[in-house]
Length: 326
Image (cartoon, rainbow, N blue to C red; front, side, top):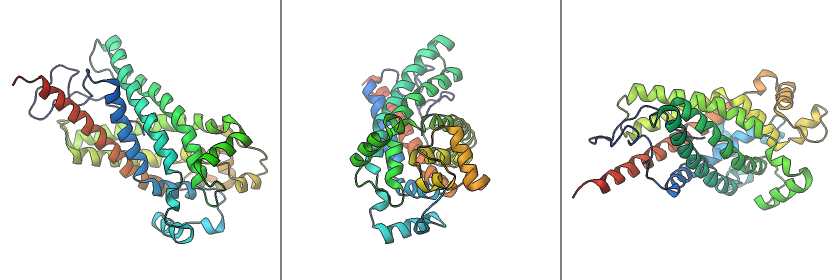
């Protein structure tokens, strides 16, 4: 998930903002590149790792032709069965590549977003808040984020699948590169981008609506950020599940599923993925794993929003205190 802050400015509780663009809602304009990258990296890593076992369940539940031993009725039941039959650490397989990918991906996303937002806002709105600038900056930053994160997603999901033949992340990377080529790591890139655009739109609209209802003054309020983030993540996750199912199929290239519909070689392209999912599961097939996806996204987005909002609040407060006369 990527976070932006294209909403009206609000001052710190008990403080006056220094200028229209210098409030708690955005990181201080004088913040260094390393500050933006650190804040983004921490939020990204926590978002992707805290609920990783549920993400592993989601990947398996989205399997279109699962092994009889890997069929699950619920998230809790799946976790219990995986741990009992495959070992306690099995739901965490691939978490290291996720952490390695999420850190730099989110760091670059936030650095790119903050820089482009300010540059475009100066051009479009003479330094004021511009929704157009926020949208363009967020879209460009998402391209960069997904370019880094997509290969990690491919490796992660192949490690998560039942009876995965890969012992380590390094073995998975080498095998995929040798047998399928470099393009395999970006086979789902267009689907990922297609999914992220509506996901972000629904996510931000819902988050802003919830903030207007429970935190209209836009103060630093951890509970409101957690609740708004959780609801926004759940709504966006449920709505974009069909795209996530297609992405998972492109990433995992399920042999049993592809063989059953007489597809030889490797499946490529979003349109082909959509057709294949429909052939194998009909309309319900597009919503495989929706429960796990929602359960995963609710706390993930809540964590990401609360961490990011805290960094913005803390950095802004620290800057204002440093400038205050003794």
